Amino acid sequence: MKTQTILGAILTLSFSLPAHAAQFNAATCSKTDVTTAINSAVDGDTVRIPGGSCTWTGAISTAKGINIIGAGEGVTMITGGGFDFSTPSGKGFRVSGMTIKGNAGLGIYSSSKTWRVDHITFDTVTGRPSSRIIWIEPVGGQSSAGVIDHVTFRNPQSIQVHYRGSQADGGNGEWMRPLGLGGSDAVYIEDSTFSHAVLEVSSPITDCDGGGRLVFRKNTVSNSYFEMHDAIIGGLRGCRKWEVYDNTFTKTYASGQCTYIGIRGGTGVVYNNTFVNPTDCDKGIQIVNYRTYQTDGDPWGSLCSNTTGKACLNTLTKGPSSCTSDANCGGGAGSCIAIDGPISSPSGYLCRDQIGTTGNSPQTSQPALFWNNLLDGVPVTTIDVTGGAYVAVNRDFCVSATTKPASCNGVTTTYTPYTYPHPLTAGGGGGTPPGPPTNLVVK
Image (cartoon, rainbow, N blue to C red; front, top):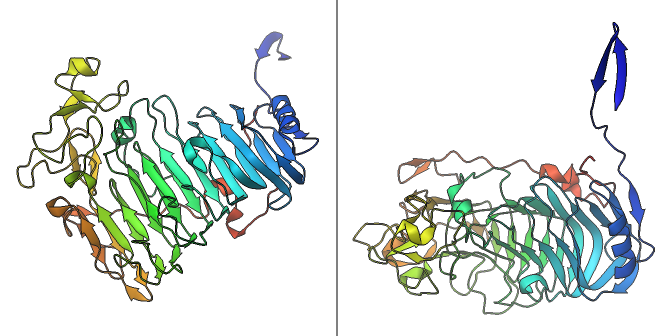
C-alpha cells in the first residue's frame, strides 16, 4: 500500500508490484529433494536440479506455474517417475535440461496456454502417464497449448506425444471453437528428434483424439510415423486439426512400416516434408476414414450412415453419447444432433469428424491440403486413401506437386504458418541450452 498527499488530499493507491522471481536449488536430484524445492517455490519461481543420477518411484505433481530446470541432458539423469502438471490457464510452466529414463514421462493435465518442454532426452522410456511419454489432457472441458522443442526421443517404447482433448466433454468444446490453422491454439512440436532403432508399429511419434490440435514442424524422424484418430474411440471426438511441415522422415528398417504420415480425421495441412526411402504401403502419406469399415463404442457403434442416429455433440456438459432428444444431453437446445450428415450417397456424408471437416452442428467442408512433399526427391502427387466415397481427392483434400493450392472444392486457402521459432522458446530455435526461465509468471 502506498499513500501520497497531493494538495491536502489523501490519495490511496493500491497495486501489486512485480515480485522478484526466486530460485530454489534442490540439494540433489532425488525425488525427495526436488519435491522439497518445488514445495518452497511459488508461481514464477525456478527450481534447479543438480547433476547426478537418481531413481524415482512415482511422479511429482504440481499445479504451480514454475520452471523446473536440470543441469543438462546427460548431466541430470532421472530414472522412473517424471512430472505431472495441472496448472490453470493463467500459469505458464517449463521443464528442461535433463535425461529421463525407464518407466517415466510427463503428464500435462493443464489448461495453460504458455508451457514449454525443451532440451530433454527421453532415453528408452516405456512411458508412464496413460502409457505415453508426454501425455496432454486438459481437464474440465478446457484446452491446452504450448511447445515441445529440442527434445530427443531415443528408442522410445511407447507413443511419444499424445494430445487428448478433455474427456469432460469428449472433445466437443474443441470442435465448437474456431479451427485456427496457423495460429497459436495448438501443441507445437518442433526442432526435435525421434530416433527409433527399429520400427515399433504400436509406438508412433504422435496420437491425437478428443479434439486435440497438433503442429509438427522441423523435426527429424527415423523408423516411425505421425498419426491421429478420427471419431471412433468410444466417447471421444476425432483429432481437430494438424499441421505437418518441414520435417524429414527416414526408414532404414527392412519392412513393416506402412506410411510416414497417417491421417484419420479432422483437417489441416501437410507440406515441405522430405521422405527418404519408400514405405511398404504407399508413397509417404496415407489417409483413412475408419468408420467406413470399423466401429467402436457409443456413439460410434455404427458405420457412416444417415441412419446412425443422434448423439450429444453440442454441449460442454456431456461427452458424446447416443440420444433421442435434447433432454438426454442435459436439456440444452440443439444438443442432440445427427451423428453423420444427411446425404444419401455416400450415406451419411459428411461422416462425423472425417478428413476435411470443420465445425460441429452441422459439420461443413474444410478440405485438407497437401503440397511440396518429396519422396527421394520426387514430388508426392498421389495419396493412398482408405475410406471409399467419403474421402475424395479435389473434394475432401487437394494435392499439389510444388505450390500451395489456392483453393480446394471452392474453399479459398488462407493459411499462413505460425511464427517460427515458437515465441515461447524466446529465440531457442538455434538450440539454446537451458538457461534462465523464459516464461515466468509474475507474482
